[in-house]
Image (cartoon, rainbow over all chains, first blue to last red; front, side):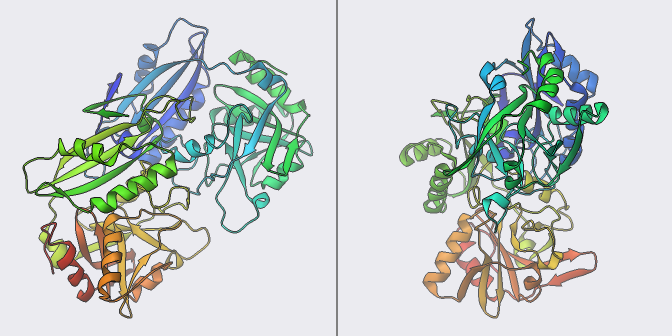
Length: 283
Length: 283
C-alpha cells in the first residue's frame, strides 16, 4: 500500500479502469463527520472489489496530516488497485494506492435550504448492476453524464431513474440524485429508494434512516418507487454527506409537467439534527 | 489539451470518475493496425462523452514519438476530461489530458490458436446502459470483476452475459468476452451479438464484419443470442485487436455442463486474413 501525493503514475488502474473506491467526508473544526459510516462503506467496497484497506488507525493518521486549521473542509480519499496486472487481471502482488486530498468547503446558496431547490429528471439512467450497488466506486460516468444534462441556473440537482426498457417514464423506478440520495414523504411515511440494484448507499442516507428508526419521528420505508409516486409526495428532499438535507421545491418531469412541494415538516426536523453540525441553514 | 507523460495529477477526472476513453492498438513494424477503425471509435466516444479530441494528425504525430524499432508493440491512448469541474460537472474550460504509452507485445501460447482456448461463463454480468454502449470508456469495473473470476490455467477467457433479472442462465443474452468480442457459427451463418445495449464495439469485430460482408465468405448476422444458442454452434471464436482471432475449444457453463467445439472452417479462413498481419498462428 502506498500513499500518493500530487501525481499518480499513468499506469494506475484508477485511471485505466476506474478500479477503486472513494469517500468524500465533511470535516468540521477538525472532526470527521460520520466516519463511523464512511469506514464501513469503505470496508464493504473493498470486500466487493477485492481491495486491501490500510488499518483504520493508519488511514486516520494520514487523514490527520491533511487536516487544516479551518472551520470546515472536505477530505477526499481515493483507493485504487495501484499499477500492474495483465489487462483486467489483478496485479500480483497488489499494491493499493491511497490518495488523500483536502478541498475547500463548497458553500451553497442559503436559498437552496430555505426555499428548496428545483430538480429535473435526468435522461441518463442508472444501469442495474448488483455487483457494484451501494459502494462508492470510481466508475462514475453515468453520474457525470446525468449531472451535465442541466444547468445550475435552472436546476440544482437531477433525479436518476433506473434503466428500464419498456415502460412509460412515469413508471420508471426513482433511485437517487446525481450526487445525493432521495427521500420523500407520502401519507406521513418517510420513503427512500432501496439501494439494491443500483445507486450509492450514502452515509447521510444511513444516518437519517438510523435516526428516524431510533427517534420514531415517523414511519420509514425503503422500497421501489416509481416516478409517478413522487407526484403524490407531500415533501421531497435530498441528502448528501457535505450538504446535509436539502429540500426540493419542484421536480421538472418533462416539458409539460412540473410538480411542486411546499411541506417541510419532516425534512425541517431532520435538518435540525443533520444540518446544524454541518453549519448549514435549518428551515 | 495536454499530453501527459509518466505521472498524472491526482485531481484528474480519469482517476476520480473514469471520465474518459481509451484505445489499445497493435503496431506491427511501426504500422498502426486498423487505425481506420480505432479513430472513428474515438470520435464516437468523444461525441458521446462530450470530450474534445486533438486533430488526427496531431494525435498520430504524438503516437509516432512512442513508436519503437521493434517488430511488434502496443500503443495505448487514454483521453481523460482533465482536472477540475465542481464534482461531476464538466470543467470550464475543459482541458483534456492525453496519455500515450507503449507496451511490450503480450505473446500468447501458440496452443491457444491451434487447439483453441477453454472458456468459462462469468457470473459478473454486463449492465444495460445505452448511453455508454459500444465506446471504449474508462469505466471497466465489470470487466475487472469478471476477468478475476477465473484462473489462466483453467480458462483463457470468460463470456459475459447481459444483466437479466428473472431468467434461467441459459436464457441470458451473451454479449462478449471480458476483453474480446464473440462470434459463433450456426447453420453456416456467422453470428455475433449486437452491441446495442451493452458491450464494446471492437475494432477487430468491425474488421471481421466488413470483410465477411465484402467477401461473402458466409452469411453474417448481428442479433440477440441466448447462451443456450451457443450449445448448438459448430464453431466459436473470439476477436481482439491485439490477439486477432482465437478459436474456442470449450465453454464451461456451470459445474455440470461444458460444451466442446471442433470445427474451424470459418474461423481458420478469417485467421488467414487477420492473424497473419499480427504474426499470430493461423489454423
